[in-house]
Length: 255
Length: 315
Image 1: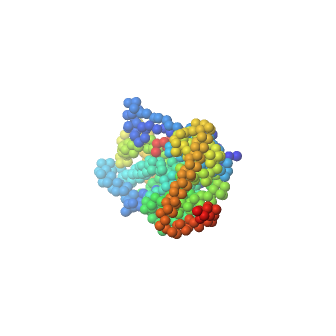
Image 2: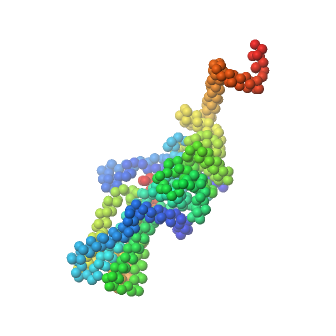
Image 3: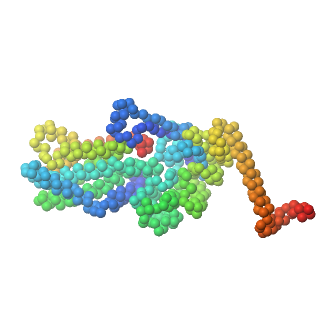
């Protein structure tokens, strides 16, 4: 795997460059827009929801931003990744290169975007009077897990998209549902113990919760949450890897 | 040890109404029992082997399974049955211009393609100027790819692919690229590469190209192997006769008949051509309007067959 990666590193770089250029050259605002869009979303949400949920939630803007930040990264990464195989069909049916390269390169531009948004997030954190502590180092853990989780999800989605072209529409609906069950703009303390447990079935919720615990509450999360974060990431990646391995040859018939 | 060894390679495609139907439609059809998947053997039981320095020509009509076979050789597809072994790096030129990105510039596309073919960045940095020069695209380096003519695109693709020093090179209808001048240049380049001892596979609809360049030949028809042989001339003769008569040979005997038929036909054509030439010449001379032509004719006859001339003059 490492050897293979080394061999194809040049290709990986070129694919990343291509995806990045294609994404930003045609829009006037380019990268600025992809930074602006989560901020505008945040603005709208805080305008609408502060009245309802914000009254008894300290640092409500940061609370919202945590959710938006991670969910936004998940959405962008998976929606882009979904097309990785279909868009590059003309390449992998003619040249023998590992197909996951296309997905990885798609993920890189989403990751860069996430990184930039993360910087803005920290500016907001400072502006809101929260002082960063050494515990912020721990944020690397959910980020790493989320990156792996996104890649896994991207693998599965891009494979499904080859077989069923309407996955994109179904996935949009799924993402909407996910937005509502990830506790982006509301708190879950009001629910019973059992319901709160059910929330943890949603991986995205776990990652968001981790973030909030560190940033807002300045608490290192429990080992269970650590375990869950890693578990979801690994399971998703294993499923994705298996899909690619198993269908590697079949992709060719469907594109 | 052979460089490429194919043993009973069969490749099955699945076809049917599963393409582009989407999940909803799939479920509906599955439930109503309307979902059909068919099998289709693109190649059936193909066996051949190549030693270092061999050049294999693959011939066959459209849809014979040539390109599919090449996909198996280059590792894109795995044979459904049989085995395919390749020892060495492969540069596959399958359908040259696909895989370029129309929004990127020529320069970016060159690097991307180079990366796809497995070169390193250092190698590409070194060879970039050479590639552009060979493709004659110096003035277009920073233009978007979509602004290039299709001839230019294939020229670039060919130039990039040619710079490799692969152990195995696969050419799928690539030698008919660009205009006349470039075709000559690419032909020369190709010969140069082949002389360096590379093992190659050439798929071409130009039988004369196969005759000229190959020392082994594989004839496929509708996925079935008609023959694999080292007697390129014999097979090409038979193949050309097959193209003219549409009679598929069933055995060695048929092949011989076809090849003989071809030779007979070529001979007949040659005689006919000579006759028409002679007739035309006669017409020109008889018309007698151009005394220069007459004089030239007499001069030639004087030189080549003086005895003929003497008799005529005597009369």
